[in-house]
Image (cartoon, rainbow, N blue to C red; front, top):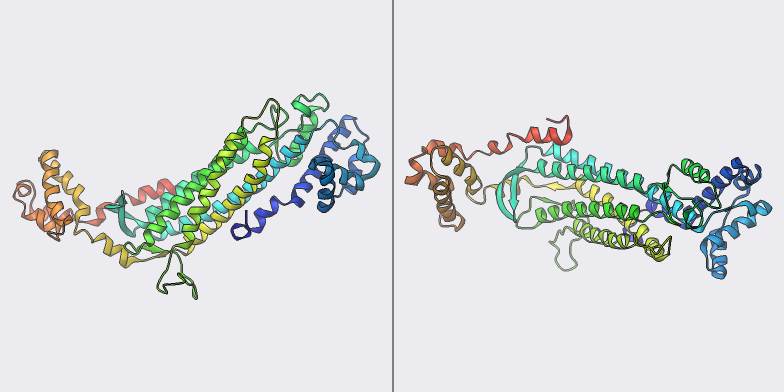
Length: 434
């Protein structure tokens, strides 16, 4: 997590100030519950809310001596609360604070990420509608296949990120659990009511069963979801990078006034943002493996997961927030080049209609094997630059003439054929669009 690829709102969630504030709330709400149970005096919660304070620098100073962050926090808190501090943390263990706080932080950052996806969805939908009928070259294996529309490309990515939003919503729900069950999770020294009370106050669900930690399969699922979203970012970024290649030139990142593309070559306009997104996606995915490995802890708990999470959680979420925001900006400003699109559509002299000719020949009575051979023989002459017009070659072919007239062949070279179901696809994706 470096400033270059970070945005303040996401960063603030992982800063010590926010973490200790959540710790204070957990302890205060736990005291409220304990007071309701009659375990501690009824006046204690009010005292904690009124006097409870902390200083990050002081906590760091204490931790240097005690070598324990939660104890350092409780010591600093007690310096402000005074005598009533003896009732704080009754029957609780450090993981009750750490894991419950972690759940709150992950839900907070999830809300930011969901807002990022919403912005991206808006941008993708707008560009999809804008270019719903902008015919362009569809490619398979990087080779010209058949026409699609630029709008279909955007609509496909919209559908993918809509799925990602649902995945993240589910992951947020799964991660939003509270565990205040004491040492080894038995509630021996604390009533389950405290966990339920704190969970409700923090907008979480009580963990059905914990050991001394919240089970890490929840976290593994969360980070796996971030990895999937990162992969979708890379897929869209890769498409844009390809479209911006000199030989393709159908779309490109916005190039602002005064921007420079190369220190050596003044003519360069490179896809630097989408290349950057490709790299960032790799980093987010890299944190999925530690999350998976954190699931298998020793017995009721160990802290092998702790160091990994202190690095991976801030890095993965802050990086993904930055990447989603950057991608939305790229889509919003993406420049489309109609002339290049038209040039590429016509580049192969009509070969993109080969399947339609094949199918019409089979409908006219020719066997599929013979039809495929007849079409391919003529197609290869154009592919190899021996001829330039596929339609004219087909019209001159005596075998094909037995089944189709010249006019019937000409009628097959019509791009409208490839857009006849665009409205139906858009309705499927956008429900009411068409």
